[in-house]
Image (cartoon, rainbow, N blue to C red; front, top):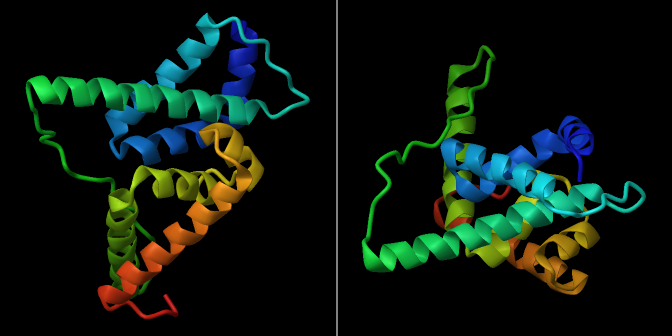
Length: 176
């Protein structure tokens, strides 16, 4: 891939890819690194980008593979010399409206939902993130994670049910 194609890809769907990186890493600095690594890997590779197929899925696949590789590397390092992340703060989403109580409740629900989603096993969290945050179709997700579309549908269903069950355990009503 050449630099012009990479630049065009960044312009067209760079924000979606960054959002996916952020949801995988749950840390802004790690997401920034993953985002840069993705486009650097694409630039270094000899992949010919076919605009008639789905180039966005190619980049999501690159992100996912780089992230998995990095997690494996980190697991090997942690087995040798464990380390802890000192920055456990997650970005809070603020709302601007007049009702402070409602804003607080929304912020709290987002925080709870984020913790629930981050606690899900990767096989459920990644398809949910791709489907809801990156707005990929089931077929596109199946290409990214290299699983059949039936498996993706099943994992989306089970993941939603796990989130719903956990929210009910925490006392949130079904209308939320």
